[in-house]
Amino acid sequence: MRRKMTLKTIEQNDIVCLYSICFEGDEKSEFEKFLAEFKDNARLNKDFQTIIFALKKIIEKGALERFFRMEGKMKDSICALSLDSRCLRLYCLRISDQVLILGNGGEKVTRTYEENEKLSGYVLDLQKFDFLLKEARKNGKVKVENNIITGIDKTVFEL
Amino acid sequence: MIQNKSFRDCIAAIPEDRMAEFELSFSIAERIVEVLKQKGMTRRDLANRLGKRESEISKWLTGRHNFTISTLSHISLALRQDIIMVTSQNYDVANEKCPMVAEDQQPYGDK
Image 1 (cartoon, rainbow over the protein chains, first blue to last red):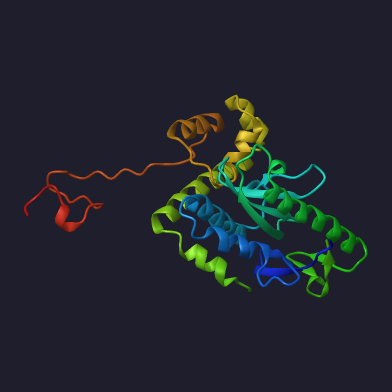
Image 2 (cartoon, rainbow over the protein chains, first blue to last red):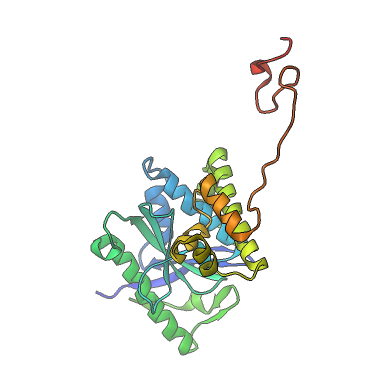
């Protein structure tokens, strides 16, 4: 079943813009769902706060490559924010130092994310979106200009 | 400038002591990056000098690593540059107040 989605701006300043994918019919973006799910989790509290702090630094310094762990496949831009090798991770699509797309995330208790249905779903959503965004850029529907994706607020993607 | 309330609330909920810990880890990583750049070295160069994998150096530079004293001293040696400096405060324990301890808990001096 194909799902429609848009990009919602989460935070933006002169240095960087953080977007998150938002599925049709959902009030919250995927990142906001991640926040709602884990902000009150006592067991994963430190992991969660580490990710929040990492995003705070990304907003101050930019989405620099060294802040992320690479995930996904070699050909995509999927990465993750986590505390060393600990369990909780937030999956992202790093477009550039100035544009970051936040997905959802969760606890990784298997050796790879592919072994976890929920996490692999989140990564797959970002991989599909990565492909669609590349197509939209090629077709001129959207354009990445410094810290914004112009035309993105009018664009609906179908996953 | 656009800000997200839910996200900002999460930042505000980080306790002061944990925020200080995060800031220190991050500052140390930034310092290592700065020194590598100054010396024209790559992560791989540092990894080779330390006998470690490049992936471990990358983990350090995320800003979220909890460094040990031992690791910091080895990094400083490998870079031939101090990564952190410890400030010392000389005070007369018998007569001076310890600045880190509350007034009514001062161990020495007239009460």
